Image (cartoon, rainbow, N blue to C red; front, side, top):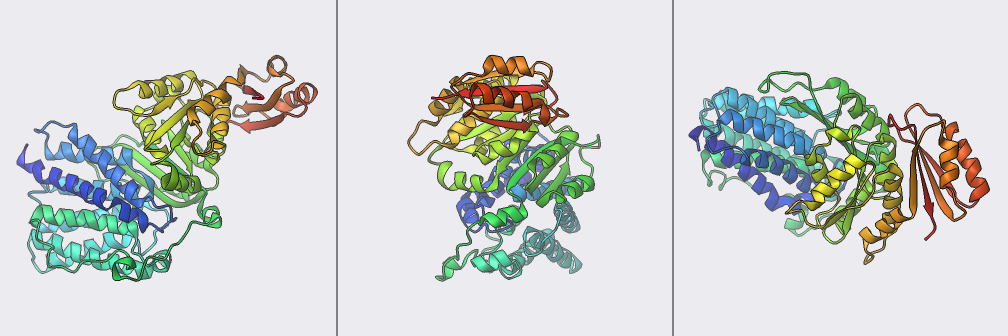
Length: 515
């Protein structure tokens, strides 16, 4: 392995391992921006994806190749607000250090400047910066390093000074951030960034370099006072956004090693839709994250930027999955090409992957959705044949345990299966319940001109549920004839009409018979 990339690889790996060891503690103290107990998990999975990309490189890979692989991998794998910010922070730091000759050769001033660029990138990624968070730690580390450079300190002393300042800022987050103060904890994202800086110091200056420095307690439990629980409330999610939307899109062609340029237009657009906005750009990609009450509009921002797939989940249900389901029960993933179905499918408990063009589905994103849904087992329902084929391919791969791909290939199939799965009680076989729902669901791909005939063909006296999904630009009035036919043939059936937001076919119909 080239000497120029040895220290870099060591730092990146040790940073991920440090977060992995602290993952449960970070999750436990996560109270901002919402107390969903996933900051440690999100940070670890983000860093893990970056290191996985590095692991695919040959031992002879250059420092620059390692930087590019990690930055791109972390950006593609970034999860949650904290993961998006840290991926941008590290990408900016690594890019500057690489230009300065590599981590092993960087001068003290280069380390300080890299920390400043990383801090600027972190602030630039956030729609509404909040002090007392990861951003405060980022700026404090930069200031501490710059002050050390001013005294002509060597490289090792500069990075140690950055850690000292970062730890002081971390300690202050408990007082500066109201949610952290109420819970008696420091900010979880800030603590995760401090771990990265600590591992950088140990990589550059030796494993014992921080031994005699003051350690910052993360929670009051370590002093015997206990952690104050701050449960998530429904109104909290309503205020900040009940849904989490994330997507990755390409940016205009630039040099892969150019300084990342924030997408201010996208940041402003998402900030108008919700909060916890983080938008990062690096190596030809832009990663967006937002908590919103209008997920269809956030999804649309991804579509107009040609995002290949958009991940949508309900925040409150995601917390429940993490707490109760992910290690004990089976999760659900919905693959759909209809942006308008994202919210109702997420409300039913599914992790939703919106894929406007099924031919452009990236297997990485499908695997990510599966990991998001559950680490125990997952059932996938797909809205069309190409998406179903991708799900079946994943389920058939060696090394992928407990992934079940349902025989679904219609958007109404997805709605029926996920709705049935939402009613399953502990101990019931989720996959079998969802399969039975599919078996009772007859479907058609229609058009506004043919909808009358298709509805008449499908409706039966034992029909209990009728689903109509309209393409973009098709009026709700198009479904009036279906309502009239249902009133005559199966008067007790529930008729639900969705604006799917897809392009074609014009109308999708599904009818579900009684059990």
